[in-house]
Image (tube, rainbow, N blue to C red; front, side, top):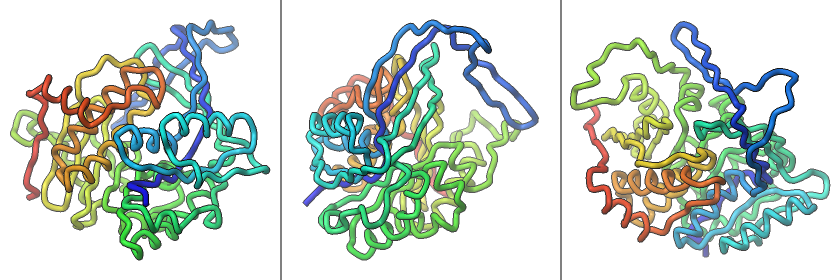
Length: 350
């Protein structure tokens, strides 16, 4: 019996840090985008580099285990040295590896992560075996014996397993949490219907939520930022549409602006917990997995779970690497006690 099983990607990540990175902002009507840029044709000096394992499937599994949950993961890796590094990392975190799938046809996923002086990053990703997870690879008997199933973002052909996994979880009373990824959204909302209808917890970042709902957050929208309620009206529209009026928990993360949540009755707003940012990589996985684990631990206390998740995310961004900075629940509580002013705002749906 497991407390949680994760399904998602596993990669070997090469972290590249260079002070030569430039941040270029491009604006148009209603939109603004930032780009990481280097001089074209130049030879760029690297200030720091490192190799670590990553990917949503193992980042979340490692954090669940660090929080004290009995954890396993279903990932697909290559049968080579990169895959062995993934297995070694999971063993170090005490994650059960019996449900890992090895492929002799495809290589383990690989990413090059370019980190800026601001702590943010751009990722160059080769999906490899991550994009080839099939229904026959999944140990459904293990899922049936788990309290929670956590779906990290999937890509390529792997997105085709979402419906069958969601149906199985619902049929066998397994709680389902999903971090909806861009690849799944690009394939159309109809392909996400079953998993969005079934999941107890749905988590997206603001860009993914906008892509899924086709709602843009208009920067010129007039609303009173100094009133009691400070959630942008377009964010509220996104939350309500994704939630569908059900009692499930829908969360939109918004980087430095914190996170927003909706449970069909209440809106929640949680600011970013104080942190000295080194790298934002892994913050989303840390937040989502801690929130899910906290919902289980607190018997559904959304406010406390948002606070716990924000503390862990802040700890992760203070470290270099997606699996550094994990905290136990006792450590999270200690940090919250040191910041009694940190609270969640709550508004009744109107």
